[in-house]
Length: 238
Image 1 (cartoon, rainbow, N blue to C red):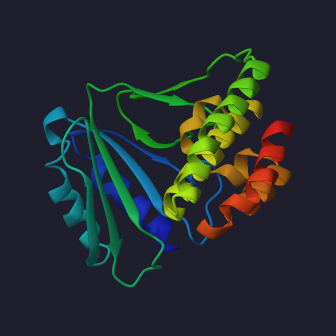
Image 2: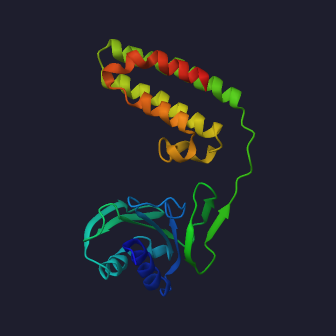
Image 3: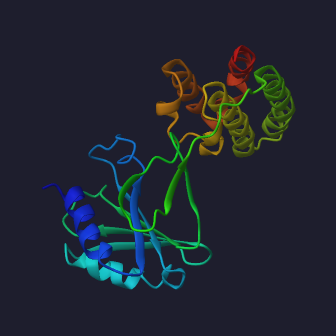
């Protein structure tokens, strides 16, 4: 049994028996059938509302039954969600375990194709999948707005270059690339992922578009001014 499977099965065995844990599901690359040797484990738990943060003490004891914890980083410790990332001694350095918790009173609404999940157990039918109906986006209007955005932010790029503020020029240049990436996601049917920026870009966009983004992102601060004509030509071609 590989370590990833060992961890998942051990968490299932030890958590499913608890009355304060109502559901366990996996998100990320495992749920999307994209896992490889660099993939982590994205675990989600629905727990009693008063256990969102306190249950981590027990989770750490459960993980330590497999191997000592040699890394712990708390991502969230207030609000509706808990999130701590762990690594176990002796395992692949990329095999981190992201444990996310939320209260039973919080609805779990997952979008198929975006928030794919592999449900390990669900005692109270907590996990709910929904499919957004197709949207008739006005791409011509969005394309016009993209071109207008480019025209506006280009001025900030040029001003920063003329002021010898190359890092600020790079910042504004990247704002244009991020806006273009949002447009591309909508164009290719990924409206629900417009805030992902470059995350999953190789999955969601055609190779020709990702190659172009690679080229545009590869410029140094000193090269921004020289690449602007190519950027404008690409923007107008989308």
